[in-house]
Image 1 (cartoon, rainbow, N blue to C red):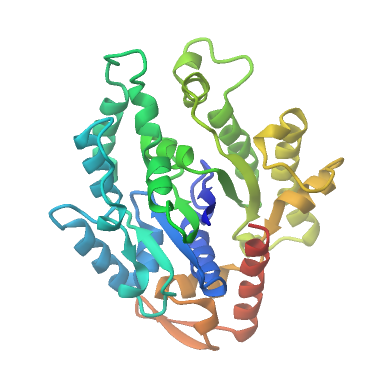
Image 2 (image 1 turned 180 degrees about the horizontal axis):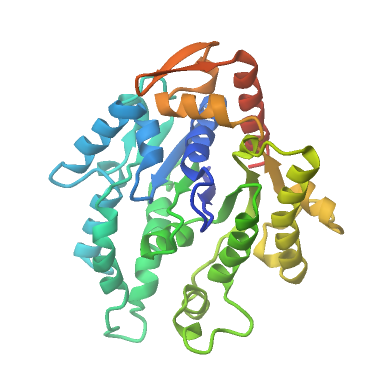
Length: 354
């Protein structure tokens, strides 16, 4: 029992659908595995995945505000503030003083789904977190930077120290700021959403450089990077588990053009894989070609966009959606039954591979 796996959804490119994918994976996995406890940790200041989970739209936004304005916020900011204030070496606070059961706020959510809520104050808090991380070490073993980096990893270890079975998803911000670093350092594995465009190719290579550094290192900044510090202080960098091709229906060109765009990012990562296979979760099959690599590590969400986005806005399970018009911010959006089916199938194919 205990922790099955922890996954951070991260790509340092914005607009690739991290929060929406986090929402759907968590809701669907919880629905399909009622004996497993699912935890979402929202470390993006926009708190979009929290908004969706807590009822979607204005309802979700109001629930976030109420959780964040408590004397000790039941949010990532509340937890981080408490740990940093207590100081290194202090006993960790009770995680259940900060985690909420999503079904208490969203009747459509499975009862085995939990959330450490996002908080807009994470952005203004970032300088204080950086200050704590860069504090002068009073002893050779203090390592304040490592202590800060491992706050979420320690939180996960603490809450999963039970006889229950847990799976964790961590939503992130594209910027590799201190709170994104904490999210990445807290996870065992990465789920990397990508778009079928040329900028995703560049972002994928940049993401690997941020995690593992460049060779040779930058002559000025190389010694200050996350990759360098993580290597020196023993931070475990998560391995790439899956590339998730999202929002692909927005590309209206030919199938050949779509395939070329998709392959561009995968080709870039395959070249990285050939040189550094240890950056990826060890495959269960032999990877001897780009095609093998794409088949094993890449999963598409080509039919995800329309039904999935409306569903997420409403905070609903895909299985609860019907073919009809739904109101989304005073506009009527039609959801087609076939699209619901395709969206559900796409999410289920990812879940099978977790």
